[in-house]
Amino acid sequence: MHMADGTVRGKDSSSAEVHFIGQIVSGSGFSDSQLFCRWSIQTGGAWHHVEGLKEGQTHADCPQLGQAAIWCHPVDVHYTIKGITGWPKLVVQVYSLDGFGRFDICGYGFCNLPSSPGAHSIDCVIWRPTGSLRDEFRQQFVGGGPQLRDPQLVYTSLDRYRIQTTAMGTVHVQISVILRNFARYGIEY
Image 1 (tube, one colour):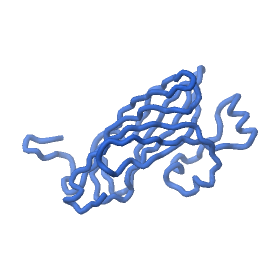
Image 2 (cartoon, rainbow, N blue to C red; image 1 turned 60 degrees about the vertical axis):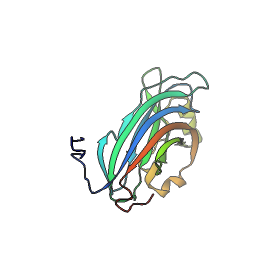
Image 3 (cartoon, rainbow, N blue to C red; image 1 turned 90 degrees about the vertical axis):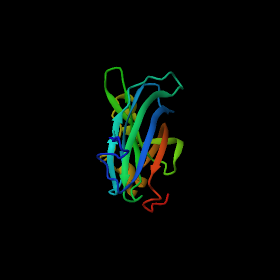
Image 4 (cartoon, one colour; image 1 turned 45 degrees about the vertical axis):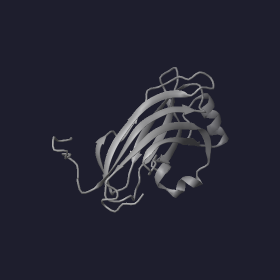
């Protein structure tokens, strides 16, 4: 909260600050079913969340054949930091919703948020694990394809490179980065 004298209450004034403002714009390359996106921002231990949502979910959109699912879901989060270790990652999971109200995971993805100030467009590639031929047929007709046991594997482990996957689509993000007091505290970006 900004005070009349220009100070900010509730924040650690002995840290550099980063503010991410933007939106999860759309998802393209997916099937023509209803789609929604769950997202979260993951950071390292040197990052302190000040305000804004670190996770959320878009509404469901049903794109026409070959069109993008339009979400335009806002992202606005503010951090104070002691160092750049653990720079934030945007982690996304795209789900499809069928006519019976059931939802299945379409895929997973993550992207590093930009570290330079200004406006940026990011394309986050989404993938899903592939199973056996039987699993793939079952998913086509019944739903419920292979899923990760631990969704943190998407962004934390080198083991994800051992998983056989298939590309599913792309989530498009527009994000602006505001940096404050980096030079003052000797943090170079």
